[in-house]
View 1 (cartoon, rainbow, N blue to C red):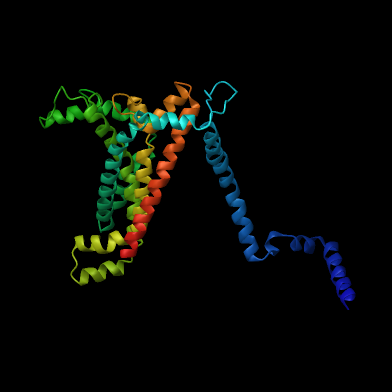
View 2: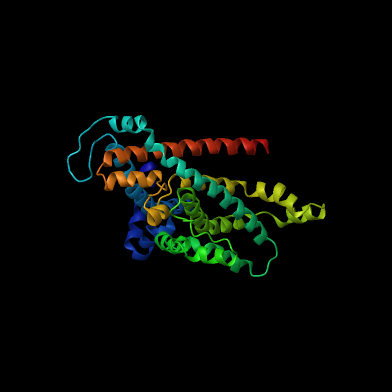
Length: 321
């Protein structure tokens, strides 16, 4: 019985092969079950991005972790294993952590940026003429290259430059004030530049999140007599809490790893040195790639710890709600 059944299936299979069109349909992608088709398509589309992510992100990170235990200078092909000596050097000299103080300016700027972006996105969510135009205007700085932004604001902050010319109109110009020369003002100026660049991106993200809130809820709140501030506090903010937490994480990690704008505008001089600029200078100016790699690993650990703390705090806040 089993033999005759197998023989019959074999005959049918050979008959299909004898007819090219039917054989082609038998082995075609469309003949596969829908679930298998979906899995194959997902794997094909994800393979190249995952490969690029591994080659350009994870592989260099693993290599950098290995370099942190060597005295490699970045030029000599030989690397000598020195254990945790680089980490001991860093923790014995607290001046390596001084650039983290600079990050506090960018951190404060990030909170201002997110606060302003939330308010502006809420205003744009109401019936407003040309609101899409305003979204485009706000988002445009995010599309400009960091190098271009650095040079633009170099002219903006230079003595008797654009900013001073505007202040002269209002009688607020001070010739002794140097926006990028005064250590008390330089990091505020650079943080302002960063806020100007990224606030539009946050506005668009928050505006998209607000649009996902059901208008029926806002209409019901309006009928019940809730004013705009109450709607913002009790409906809009909880409704965008997920994207708000994501942007807050990106802002904090960005404040710790800021590099382009201060490097282009000041190269880290006059008290504007950041942690990443310090690592880059050690690696490429002082040829201490091993020590710079150890600094990068420490920064990565600090970022991961802060993100875990933030995730825990946001989770507790959501539990209270």
